[in-house]
Image 1 (cartoon, helix red, strand yellow):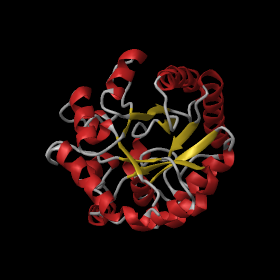
Image 2: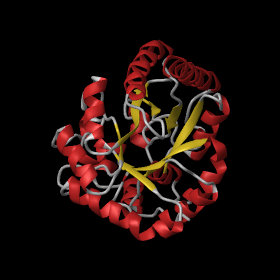
Image 3: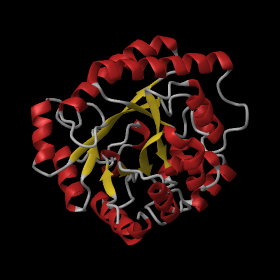
Length: 308
């Protein structure tokens, strides 16, 4: 049976990129200890400065726990051309650190829109009306920024870039994901397919078919679940993204709408060899991150036979 490689991320310990959702700031050493103790073998970097930014120090922290660095999330307001150069500089700085500690598989630069920064997209997250997104000229600017960033990161560091579709950003719905992929360079930028964000943004949980829809552009996988009751309430009551997040729209794996066994079967059919990264946005009042991480890992072990 093929071995399922499973990582987890600092966001599962409350180090979320959004000020509106930040809780207790658990130090990186404790986070990495608990991540390893609960059965994960890979991690992402988290916000710049959360983990050591000196390559030797970071490599030491990973090595003593037997962990692989999988990637780093870099948000850029790609709709705004004046944000591109600074975003590229941040991405290159981050990718250089990733490259310095790279092992197998190589990490990805995880590019995203500056999610949660546009009030209208934040308000409508999970229920974006058809045709409410970027104009043709705005898509051109957005894609140009992503292409330039991915090309520069590859040239400067040898690492590839994956784009993270994400609720409360301009690439949320299935059609927006299509448009982004159609507008960008398939040789230099792929997709990190996030099961939870897809489910909430699409309004359905057919993630296995979505994996087929995006095909060879899917280079990396994030496993996140989506609570159908919370998401339905969020839509009915008009909650914004942060309100839905605080009500636990992204629940523990196996407790929501995502069919993870089907997802594993489809990944096996595609002969996927990379990591799946668990993301569980643990907010204040949701319990202990370590125990949540343990339950998520145990759930994946219980269905791992589907990945064969």
